[in-house]
Image (tube, rainbow, N blue to C red):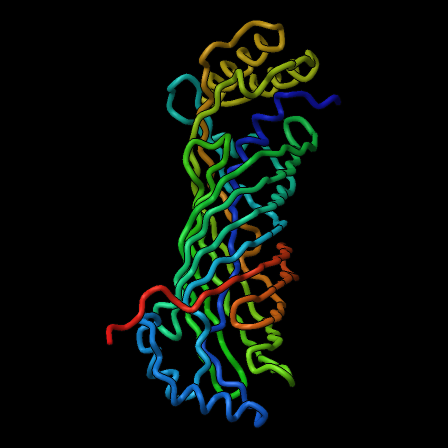
Length: 349
């Protein structure tokens, strides 16, 4: 059966699964266990640490920890694909109460693919605590498969802006370091009324391999796990005029009317009103300000997956990081260029 613009309604309803994610993190103060740099780390113990941040930084330096430059900014490219489960769907029309139609429609897998470009400023508040902001944008592609009442598969693309806050806690035990990163991020989607929040948490265990020629140059590798949850419920409204430009498939509309005839009274009334407006639009009549209201309950199909990553630190100013998410029902790739400066605020003499 020919796919027509009516299916944009279903795609946009399920598009609220989108979430722009930042999985970047910082490793924090380190001791490199290498006799080549014993003199370098001894010099840290004798230095008079001049900056206010990180708090307790002077004490950490005197214990031989190599503190990262305090202030940083990252340019991040991130792509992710994951499966979303829609647990319930309710719709309304023209200000009516929403009615649950979950029992009367059947969906196959819903796949959301995200491409995000993010700017992330950060600061080390403590030697083991980094706080950062997230601002950026990107695109999403949502693939929806409807099985009943009409079988079809379609993909829609939308633009998104995002913003959020996060923090990373770090620690070390001998040659192994640990990083626990958490952020709360909001995706402002062009077709969704309110920003969609997502919570992301990741835990990494890694090791840093020092350069043989420069104590500030090293390679870090790690393994960890990534966890994501998105807001369970999303509610909004969509003008019919935005959904059905150029609609035209009488046979499909007839099939939808047959489906609506078999619904319970409350669902049938709403479905018939929506289908009638869609049919008007298909015939070239302006549907005016007719609004389709919706509410979804959803979740990610698999909240956890494995992550593998590496970072090359050219010096204490420049770092290049990459990370791959695998297994589960989510795949990810991240590329991060980080630039750092020592600090703005110096201690008073």
